[in-house]
Length: 167
Length: 367
Image (cartoon, rainbow over all chains, first blue to last red; front, top):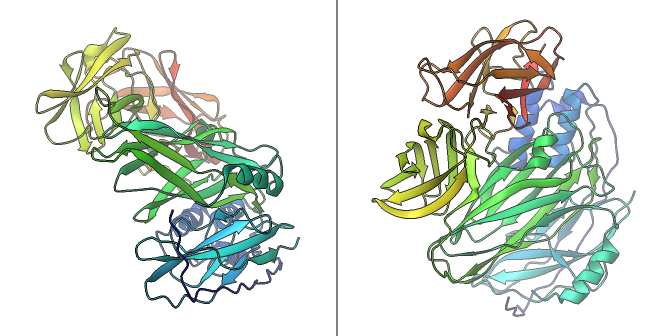
């Protein structure tokens, strides 16, 4: 893909410190608030994770809906505890481009400083922030962002930000 | 992109534990107007993965994607859910209410119908937002590589339909066609207006058509054959020919959600739908709905013996025959939930007609 440098684009990444608080909060898995955790809650979590209904879960972080939430609620339907613990994540934010024709940003991640990087966002994200919920404990990641204009042209990589994920 | 293949490979090795779970997307080739099959394969390696999700970005102007669950999903009692999360992006989610680990193999097969006006070139199937979770609900690493479809200039006839697109409508599993079976055909542009389908010249009853899909009831004249020539016509002109295997029976129970997996289309004795929230008591009668039972007698009862196992225990069958009010080709089986059957909300149920057992993946809730 052709890249062009878009003046004014800069990035500053910040890391959200993931908390590791654990709780046995059954009600967090009771998504439909009917007093029981059952297959209907799993179905609802699935629908939320697919974006079919708004995400209201508080199981793996505030308003986080994904496969982790589905699995934890599944486990709770079998009588296990409702594991409520934030999945590690890295919250990224950057200074928006001042170019008027920028329509979004692509986020890339690498395991080695300087790249290579793998694209995390299949389509550009419009906001100047992104949370990566796919990080793993005890891993170090390197992030860069590009800006995309209305013609699909992509800028060069931003400066790189490092995220060290704790255990 | 800016990655050099050599450096990308080296970095991948450094970044990822050697035995991390892995998703692999195939890179098949096809022609404009053709159907292309793209298997997506999972390997757990040394990890235990209970569920996973990922997004696929693709060119929806040139490709139409359907997905059929594969053996890894079926044998692990998982289900495949998907939704479009954007005009060019589809999210896939594989999970199971059993919570157990996912086995290795084909997770699902993407049926890509390449548009008739698609230009030659490589159409990427870009994977993103990859997540996996272990049976305890902890995120685990999962690597995935992008796939692509190489669209090449058509030379000769376009392969609109493949054997992998001839599916039992209940299980959505490809396989031989049985007389009277309700069949789903997936193929590029096969279901346009004016369509007709014949097996060795005998017309099939069309039940549903969409641009890339046809549901039909196979003619009973297939009885006794081992193969037949399937022909699709539009305005009486042939547009696809395919030799298909034929079997005396190819049974499968319909699922509640139409995916071919999970809770079956089964009624409890009180005529309510069986579900995890509405289990059938042991000793009660349930009615299941299936297809692929093969030739029937004048009373719409299969000529071959029908048997059912629930949780591995033989279930006495009291009725097996046509389902009143439903199209020909649908089999209704009334059987008793054995007293010795295990209880649970996802008790495996298998239907056998003659010596042919239906595919795994259908469950019954029992209490």
